[in-house]
Picture 1: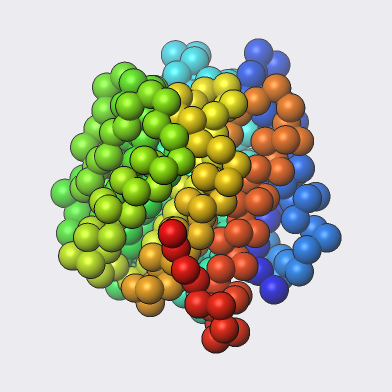
Picture 2 (picture 1 turned 135 degrees about the vertical axis):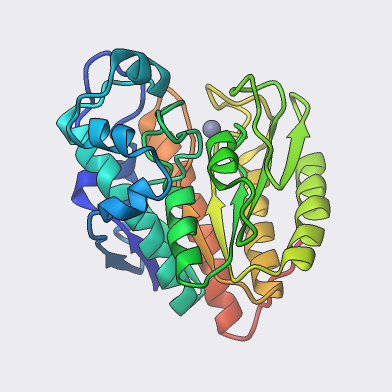
Length: 306
Ligand SMILES: [Zn+2]
């Protein structure tokens, strides 16, 4: 059984003037359902958790669905009441996935990874930064999180919102020339050239993340498992194959297991004309991660990473 967090409000109807794939999370749920899934529903995120990371005025603007046009433009879609309800439940979902991972080894949120959201505004299809919100709340409970961000875009919002904190660490491996133009500073940034393929990507990921995990020894990995490093992704610039993405998930799970760390994953970016194909890629990521932990618990088939 793989523990997955999902809330009906994750599936918001598309607002007008939006290019974001709003049905992605519903498709992810539908595609996961036939598998051995232990479903969990999060509570709405407490207001205090949102305000611990975001400017209270911005939180109020979102929850009342009265975000100024300029911020909506930066976010990439209008904040309707449905979008606001979705934004309210996703961070609690990421926190719940972290709590379930601490219990079971692995859990996934079927949304989240909103790594571009900043203190006072959304950005790049992200409204509230669920990664930072969950990490800050976990830190208040004594749990030190490392946020590992493998989305093709830099985790700039997460880095900015957690900067200077000794109780959390950020790692971002991304295409250097991609959005955002102005990068923030993560604990460790690994910028990659356009067209980086499977072998160089996986070698670089392993060579940079392993020493950071050894040095920091966090209590938990919060994983932004964006699938947009895929070669055909509409917004990506890297050249990973599906096999390369599968190997990435086995590598991440393997490093977590070797370090005795629980891992909670979030969905992150993935863009294409065919929403079903993108959702399948996310589901494959979740199942690959989950199965690595399941087979490890069985004691046989200890994960071997190339
Ligand atoms: Zn992305």
